Image (cartoon, rainbow, N blue to C red; front, side, top):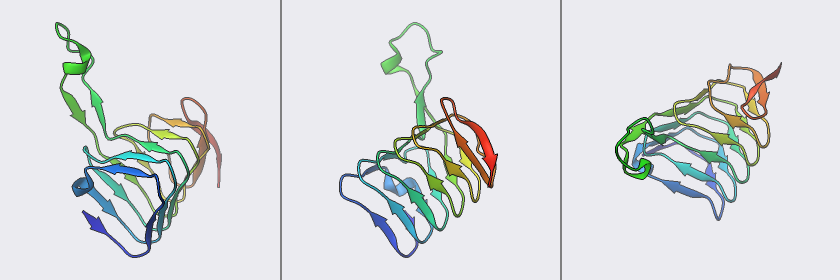
Length: 132
């Protein structure tokens, strides 16, 4: 794990596989977040991760037939979060996504594809709403 300065993780946040995480400086991870780093997570500087956020870096290979999905191999897909990003409360970021510098993820959004730098996204699935 790499960790910059002034990284605050509030009580109730749950982070796993920290050895696969790289955190910049000035990051806040608020209550009730669920962040799985098995597939790799990079977080830039000046990032706010609001309450109840989930960040996933793995998924099951559900296309494998002939066995229960719960036994299917895990697919590891890293997530990258740029600098000066705000991830809104109760949003979900799925495996393999990059959130660009200066982006905002709206509360409750489900981010299934990359978020362009300097944009605001929201919805299910998340789409660009506006440019900052």
